[in-house]
Length: 338
Image 1 (spheres, rainbow, N blue to C red):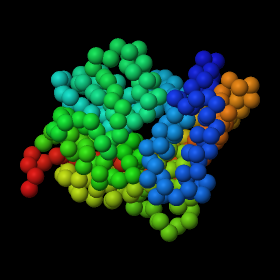
Image 2 (tube, rainbow, N blue to C red; image 1 turned 90 degrees about the vertical axis):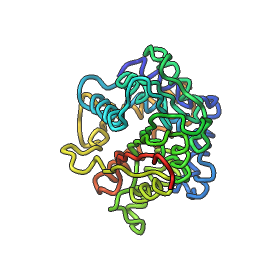
Image 3 (cartoon, one colour; image 1 turned 45 degrees about the vertical axis):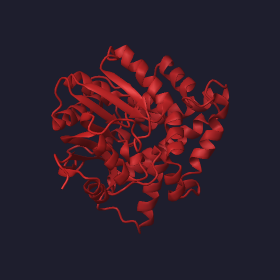
């Protein structure tokens, strides 16, 4: 664990939230969720506030835990998945592409380098955009990659503006999938494709099973989600929005290595040390210590805690095969609407 990594984590917790307001933001965020007495309709009605608070609070932990991979393994597998999306869309130099829910732009930069396209990332979180712009500059990609701050349910783009659109783990934040997909369809050129790799509950999920509901609630708490939909609901929503589904598949099925392995505390790995039980314990103690000496803002340890809860829910959901974070679909906008 590097000293600079720990300090970056401590000083960036809260994102654009004032340091003295982080703890109250954690209070408000937690109260949206079932684990703290929250309700689904409240999350949907206030999804923008909930998701913004989540990414302000969690982004530094994401960068700390996931952004330090070296060599083969997880880092390379993420690149391959991003290249797969680019190839499925048939991206070519000169195309204008949209990344919906771009975060700080990890996939955006990798796909831009791989495909030589111009990519716009839409994101409603000011802090993530500022980080993304800085990382674009450091990567020398400011000329081909940019961000627009907006809600992806109300995108400030013209009809038929983009040659290709993709999303990674972002549209699960949308309270209304049909409205979200319809807006994506509006800004995509006819005959072009939309690809996504998203989080869904699988056909094995039983809404009447209390254990399944607990896992779902933990994932929603730790990832800023109003209501995780099923894969079937996803495909139905795409069709209602006007898309033709080219193909769809849960990429977790048949994988020789469980997708949740990096988060499994029973697995030890040097390359993913920060995600092991021992690594998490060190991070937990470090965050508490930095909060105690007031380097990290009050509430930081609680953010670390609900992210750990989410990791546990995600792993258990994977083991029970009721949750997948890599359900892929490719959909095409028809050349004409009948």
